[in-house]
Length: 469
Image (cartoon, rainbow, N blue to C red; front, side, top):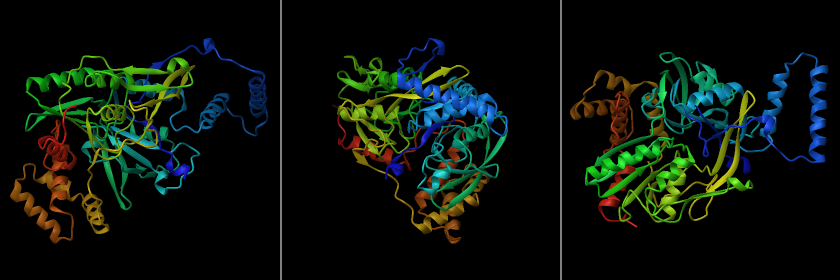
């Protein structure tokens, strides 16, 4: 069904993805072509606007009717990524693009107002992904979770703007959110707001001279951070590379194009196509590369990899430069611009992007070359996981055993199983490890013990299944 296939209207509570930057214009100078039909409709609208002001039973502020009309105008486009921005929205956007604000660190989404909701979960707020090293991440909120309540109040009737307003606030203040995981696991988490700084890149060396590059977000600074990471790998004698864009919601088009050029020596990196002539652009790679062309490269992807991260993954896949491992990506293949408009603004889809193979992945995503993902839990296992989360069994254990050795952990796992928990030891060990990591100011860059997608990438590199171009 068409409505079933429509993807969520994404508004990122931490950072507004704008592929082509922010363009400002003076409304009075904005030239447009008009014809008699357009003038006729504008005349009708002006008449009705004034009629409502003068005849509605209650006095309605002019700005309320004005903003309502603009929101309706954008909703009529039937585009999840185009919408009107109020003055408050624009201020929030300006706050987020500075990279610092008070919040909990979540990328969230909810269907646009008026959208048909065939899935009951569409009533709630979906977590696209938490931002690493933020309160939400450390509290254990995951991509795919749903927020059902904030401070005990349902989010069903809230707009995405309302939700963002309630999650943001002064650093040091608390907000209680109710999380729904899967179909039946529901529990409360108290998040202490903090100054959120958008992270970009993390790097480390894996055993076997494998460089590990995690790109968290594509910002104006990401290409410089990636360049620094590559220098770090060179200094440490790397012979292969793993690029991890799992949970990466995207970012700036210019940034990802610059990074793609580090790996590709010829041909297009990404192409944008629009009915507006000056928005048609081909981002070409240059002859020089920072990463040798014979360097084996694995790219880790999942359902949280969106927009700009899909551009990088698609470019490396289409050119044979990298092997994709993990799950099919989110599927956002459109380009937006944010523009000021009097006191408010607008975010408008102006083009679609295409991979080097001339493929637009909007609402489709990019499939991995090797699919690897955690198996789905049985109903009994889901119930056990729900108990662990609701009763804080893992978090309480970690709080009272800050340096638990293997013997202590094994004893705890046996106690859980004696109490009816049916999860595999590996899953419980991973939960314990994750809980420990969230308590750290600087958590480990990778987890080779329990990350099965990373394990597969390392295996494929070591066995020669992944080769240089």
